[in-house]
Length: 123
Image 1 (cartoon, rainbow, N blue to C red):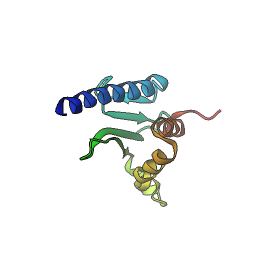
Image 2 (tube, rainbow, N blue to C red):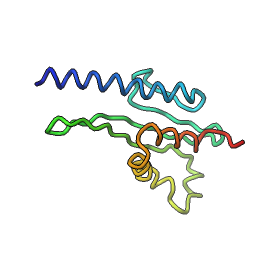
Image 3 (tube, rainbow, N blue to C red):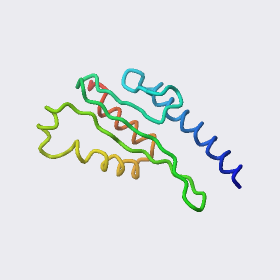
Image 4 (cartoon, rainbow, N blue to C red):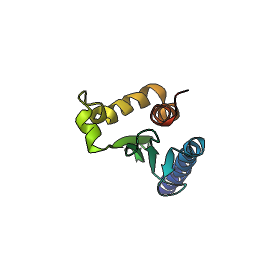
């Protein structure tokens, strides 16, 4: 049983690495994996808004029954000036909004949407 759990964690960790690496390859100018190809942390930087950065932290949780759940959290790095201008508290509520987006779109589509919103130039 313990061996099976370790094997599952190893396989999940490898798929985790591949998933984040795929996103970085798709958006090389905007996405950085700070710990290399097996990073559990993805930084998304806006070229249009210097100093504005989102960090996605990826964790794996296993419940008592052995069910595995990926957990993604969003952290924001925003200049103090921008925080003062955010009267609607969009930045403050971004982590909760990201969780909702994950529930609706799934992991890859949610990350893709977030990166496009923050980083891709409008034509």
